[in-house]
Structures are given as structure tokens and as C-alpha cells.
Length: 377
Ligand code: ZN
Image 1 (spheres, rainbow, N blue to C red):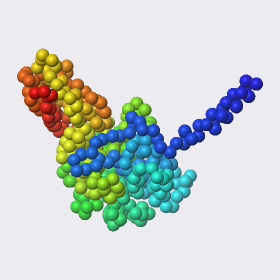
Image 2 (image 1 turned 90 degrees about the vertical axis):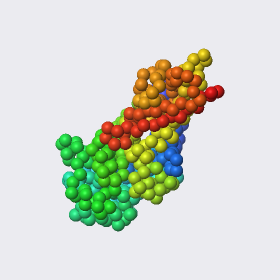
Image 3 (image 1 turned 180 degrees about the vertical axis):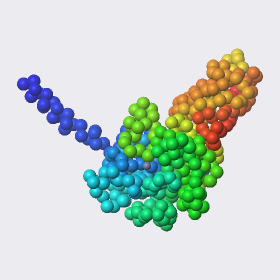
């Protein structure tokens, strides 16, 4: 009798739950990757390098879509290997655009841009590269790698160098440009470079981007599950390329990439050209309140941080703090109080900081200035 009751309960649970399990919209949550817009541009969160079972990934394309929706991502590019298909015998698929088509179908009316891409998978040089914004990936199945890059360009593609620091192709992990890459760049066939791929970062790749005017990128190159790879349940996040775009569309993203308007966001570090990283940091911060503590010359400043970055700031203002050393952290999506000893009651105070977890060139961190107008002064 007891067993029978249990089965009845189990049945009713099964009837009640499917709508919750298969809910179309993921709940808003802390995992959503959030950055403010910067003056003149929208900040779009993008991952231009993901895999599925259609090459060497472990999931069906709709899982990539669901992960991206949960992460609040604006755009992903599905980039299966052209030359490496280990699941081909189990999942034969003659059409190289199929993974992208399935992903697009699974988006339905939800808000995610899914770009068609391919990973050109060659020995170094030129190594691996992703061509995105493709019309027909099947036409990239050519022997000569140079012709593959040219075909991508003919289709209006944007092509970038993947993980130039990958230790499987360079044991020292040092990204190094070759004659072949210089030729691709000279022909306009190589336009960007991953300074971050998966769990890895390369100062040398950043220097190559700056020296050769390549777009700075960070992508997950995810093969398994984003949640497991980046420990999302404990606050981790996948690496993403932030694109500063004039409109939220594939065309807007492409224009932003072609103009090099990006920043890489990786493991609580922002990487990019100073002209984009500085405004992004500035747009993240807002002085909510600034008042002198009663009967003192100590200024209490409440600084709100509207980004996902836990900013690590090194004080360069000349003032010292009453409740912190020279290094302070600003909590993401929170407000931090700073107590500044200004020695006299000032009508305005400029606080200069070096942003230690932002990188604009190897060993170079941007400086920002927070302008403060104390109340009642
Ligand atoms: Zn890849």
C-alpha cells in the first residue's frame, strides 16, 4: 500500500514538472555577463569560438544556444573544425553549415545572434584560425590554406588567429608571428587574434595585436559544458569578446570587429586597447554619495560598480585612505565605501587609480580618475 502511494505521488510530480523543466526563458541570474555601454557604442558580449558534436565537441548545437542565453550573451559563432571530425562515423553530416542551422532553429524567437563560422585547422604555420560571418562553409573545403582564407574573405568573412600560444603547436607557449601570418595580414585575410583562448592568456599575442593592428579577442573554444569548464556555479565565467558596436546585429558586430573596437574579458581581467578599456572602466563606476564625516576631514565616498569586474585599484591620488591600504577592490554590481583623508574640506576631489586587473599592453595598466564633488562643500 505504501509503495502504491509513492508511485501515485511520483506520477503527479512528473505531470506537474515538465513545464518548469522545459521553460523557454532561463531565469535572470548572477551568471549573466553584464557590462555597461560606453559613450557612442553598445557593449555586446560575444563568444566567437564554440564546438559541438558536428566536429569534436560533446554536445548538440542547441545546448550551446541554451548556455549562451543563460550567460546573457549577445552573439555566438558556431565554429566547427573543417579538417577534424572525430564523430563523423557516428554522426555523418555532409553539410558543414548544419550545426549553425540547428543552432539558429533552436533559438526560435529568443534574443541571441548565432553566426556561421568554421575553424581552419592546420599545422603551424598558419595554425588554427576561425572564419566567421560565412555564407557557405562547404566552399572552404580546399587544400591550399591560403585559398581557404581567400574564400572566407570572398564570402565577407572575418578571420582571426586562434590560440597562437597553444602549447600543442608551440611547446614554449609563446605566440610568435611567421612570414605566413604576415602575408595573410598583408592581404587582409587575418584580421583578429585570440589573446585569450579557453583558460589561457598570452601577453605575446596582445603585443602581436598591437603591432599588427589585429582585433583583440577572447573566446571560450568550449567543447564540453561551459558550467563545468568555468565553474559557473561558483561565480566563474567563460571568456568573452566585448564588441563596441553601433547596433545590436550581425552587421553591427562585424563592423565593430573590423574596426578593432573590442575588449577581452577573462578570469576577472579586462584586456584591450586603452581607448576602449578606459571608457569601459569609467562607465562601470558611479560616485553615489560623497560626504565629509561629521567634525572630521575624512571624506566618505560611495562608489557603485555596475560591471561584472571586481576592480583591483592601486591608489595614485596622493591622498591616503582611512580604512584601506593603497590597494582597494570594488565589488562587482555592488557599492564600496572609501574613506579619503583629504587634510582639508575640499569642494572637489580627484582620485586617480591604476586598474591592476585591466591590461592595455604587456605589463601596462590603464589609469582612471574618479571625480568627486563632496556634498555641502
Ligand atoms: Zn577550436
